[in-house]
Amino acid sequence: MLTRIDHIGIACHDLEATVEFYKATYGFTDAHFEVNEEQGVRECMLKINETGDGAASYLQLIEPIRDDSAVAKWLAKNGEGVHHIAFGTDGTVVGEAAGIAGKGVRVLYDAPRNGSMGSLINFLHPKDCHGVLTELVQKRRDTE
Image 1 (cartoon, rainbow, N blue to C red):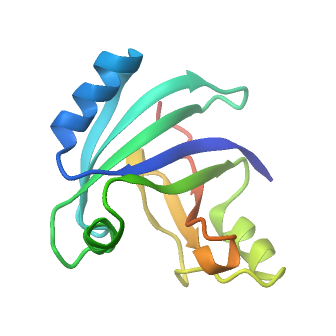
Image 2 (image 1 turned 30 degrees about the vertical axis):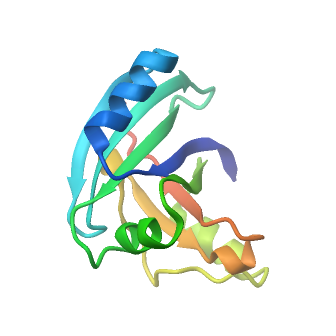
């Protein structure tokens, strides 16, 4: 079952400047920085609040590290802004993706990939989700 909005992904050209904007403007704290080589991004997860299932809601600020990454291509076409919405599950990404695929929504990866903070992720095709790139997130149980 999908239990929360895990994060909103925001694509940016300058990660440090964007992090500082969100910290100075809204008072968010930087919870986690990492590089995801597989996705071709540097990112910062800014914690918004805790949630009832023991997880948290975040803003994920993402900056491409390669010109051939999906985020770099998206930025070139759309400019900075909201890139995707991610829903967390209390089950598994595999199970959620299979259930949603059974309703006619295309799942982008055959198997989950590594996401932020040790999570497992998969994406749903934006053309099947009313124009919104949608991510499914299975939180690693020992992170936070």
